[in-house]
Image (cartoon, rainbow over all chains, first blue to last red):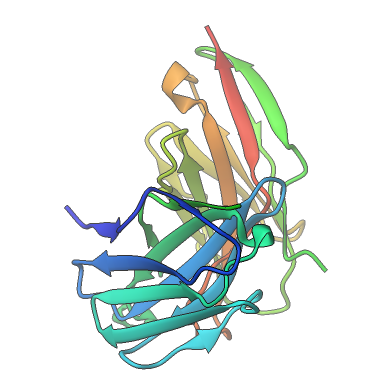
Length: 116
Length: 116
């Protein structure tokens, strides 16, 4: 079974703390993504990566950074957590488009972060 | 402007009946893909169905079908013979071919509740 694993299902952090959200996939996918999910807003893309050490900003990158040192691992970093970053964070991966596939995203189970 | 619009924040359906979840999209790219995902209360995003813009026939996957009306830019999900386990959030998403990032753009979602 294909699998995307997020390191923590639930986290509670304090304002100003540095937060690391880890994501690992075992499908040898080139593309990896971090989305944020909020009620009424759907999923919004924070950052994505299409190769090791490559990263590109999504629609809402402010306050976040990412790291992709290995193909299977994509980390989301909140340098100084704030209360407005309380949210569900979803990691996803996909094959590179030209392999003739649909580009379906495979998601992890999500990490619910609360910043106090 | 919203690229993916889901106008139904919540819907009810009686068990064993069919239900249609609405999705409209906005793109000028002639080549694009449309996706539906299901998110149960557990949080994981489950891929349901895919429709390519050049596909001649509407996509079907078991009890799921996609009512694709290209001229109207709509991609409604039809679930036949609803089951209690269909209660979940449903997200419509789009990927544009000209966007080489392979990212999906998501709508705000529809929460479906199946009544026994």
